[in-house]
Image 1 (spheres, rainbow, N blue to C red):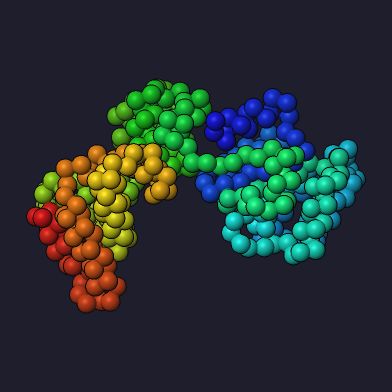
Image 2: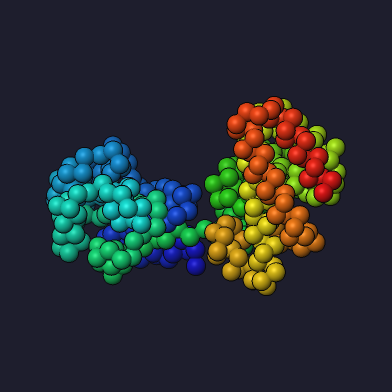
Amino acid sequence: MTIFDNFENAKRNGLPQITVIAGESEELVSEVRDQVLGYLKFDTANLSQSYFDLLEADSDVALEELESLPFFSDQRLVIFENLLNLSTAKKSVFNENQMERFGHFLDVPVESTQLIIVIHGKLDSRLKVTKMLKKTALILEAIPLSPQELQNYFMKNSELKPRVLLRLAEKSSFSFSIMKQNLALLQTYANSKEVLLDDLERIIPKSLQENIFDLTDLVLKGRASEARNLVTDLMNSGEDIVKILAILTNSYRLYYQVKIFQAQKTPESQQTSQLKIHPYRVKLANDLVRKLSRKYLRESLLALINLDYEIKTGRADKELLFDVELMKLSLA
């Protein structure tokens, strides 16, 4: 189940006294935080509700608020964001004494206080405090959504047809936050009318990542002239050669890694786990490199890394160097 499924299940009986939202997927942590605060009707003007970004707030004041009885109502809501002591980031916002006070609250919580903890990172399961939370709190873990989970979520929250939704996901690089933004743009454009594929292609611009994939495809097919035209279009739209080169290099690095995995007969699911990238990108890479030689990918990757060094050391005009390398890759 996804983090959204777990949240929906928890809402049926009401959230428990302590809820933790944590995970390495920044966009999902932020989205679920907003949904939880919306569900609890959080309002900065409500004196019985307090929000503390612990990277900026006074930690003692935050703990005093947590330990105090409510004054203006029967219940108090306290939100702690960025309680980094509980993450694997090896950073602290509470000192040792403050962590003891926090641990005491978990041992003997003020019954009238509801606590929401938001952590932009992975929970450190080795900590005593984390083990306590796992026994008593609702843990909403932000694990990146698979392509199907992403589509299922937006299927429930839009009226787009499956084919249109799939294309929207592809154009959004299967990013939750980008897909949400693009969906809002489409809905504004459609004005309650049905959105067709043609509408989507016209309204939603290609991401730089998608353009680089197109560029790679043109290079691998030896269509150098079209590849150069695409680079020119990207530069005219404000993209820098160094940024284009960085993404292209990362793409070739991924292709080379995937080619090695293919030689080892490593399943795509295991590749995804080891590479720590979206399953859709792994699938695209596997399809793309199947007919390419490992030698070509290795030499191309080394050439791009060397090009990056030459550009950054100012040996020649960066656009000229990139254009020459693009020609070489297309003729390889």
